[in-house]
Image (cartoon, rainbow, N blue to C red; front, side):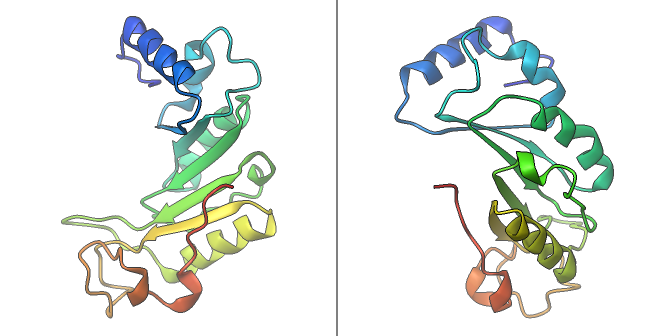
Length: 170
């Protein structure tokens, strides 16, 4: 949606479709939240109730680059996808502007490990701020998760019980 190479005509068509489907929740996730203000429709105002805006964050460097842009955009709901979680990430400066945080490990061949304590820390930060949290998967790297059987660590029944948190915004 906010890609540098997406055509303006395509974006106008998509905004028209989103506007015409107010009963659907549109979850727009981008690695380029800095582009969003110039690409929002003219009637965006404080955000449309059926559009959730999010960005991906995998480490503190990207958190510092992307979250301030997202936090500055008027939106009904702002969220992060902290995937793959590659280090402990401090969200404290922005949690008051975020409504939902999804986190998970990396999947696929060559996946880098996600440590249980990183997920727990993120879970606790988000909970303390009153936001919703969702642990999506633990990742394919079995270094920290030797008991996981599913390929991406996506089965909560195999996880430590305290990580089985899958909340969605109300």
